[in-house]
Image 1 (cartoon, rainbow, N blue to C red):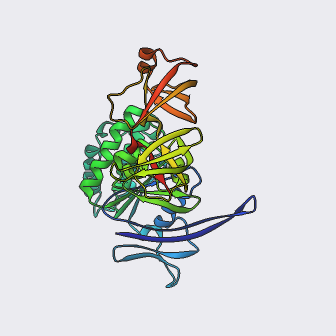
Image 2 (image 1 turned 90 degrees about the vertical axis):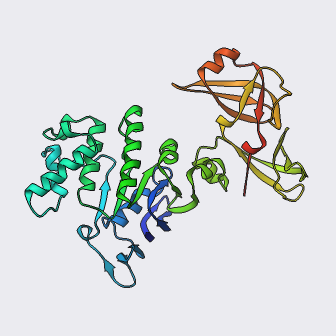
Image 3 (image 1 turned 180 degrees about the vertical axis):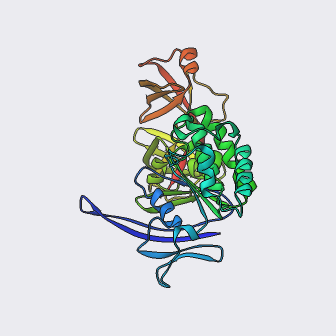
Length: 361
């Protein structure tokens, strides 16, 4: 198990100190470090690898202490047995793919080293790249070579810093499967840095949300995405609709609490808060269903009439802004827009299940 307590100050920006102060643990499986750019995710990896020295703290993996500021311990990088895959892969441009991998091998003989390299090429299905240089490889091939080079050192832990940011969607999907399979076979902890929602959910057994150098929530990825505990975390994990309302009344027998948000009234799972107390509510845009008709035969506790105020089209989805006493962002498909003939000014009904409305602290 990795146990890392890291404190590091980097000076200040606009008069505010920039610091990292985290205490995190990672066991077997893939632990995702999630957060915006500049949150401190890469610095945490660098401190674990030994590239960055904390001001204070302690970092250990099992019985091996990598760093202890009190005991005066700071193992050099080469003694930590850490595999590191950088965002830009950091392959040696003057070496072939094979020699990039051989560089990290510590086999007893050249023959054993080449045999191990062939095993890694086969594992990652990149046998045809062996004699090619990095500039002759695709983004996916470079990523596989970087993974193989990191694995060649027989690491006790793997650190991956946004390794898929430069590959296309189809390649990303394949590589996510490979990374997950490699972790299961190796049985060692993986720390995976990303701010991509789908990568976090597909890979992570645990997710640690980092913001401004601190841990703001941790747990299973889907639990955090669907039930963030605070408004800042909700916004970090992409909850597009966050509102402050007040408690109107409770129906404990139905498991429901009624909340008033400006001119809108919604029902959410029972929360037991005092009547009249303020409460923050969040709902993801994809958890809202759009209808042109008022539906009565539905399990949704909330059927809100509204008018489309804005339509924004993306490659694979459309975002609607619907005013129903509050402005709600709603994510739908292009097909839904065509089928329902949705336009700015169209009157619609928004269907929201109570369970989709999450109460935050």
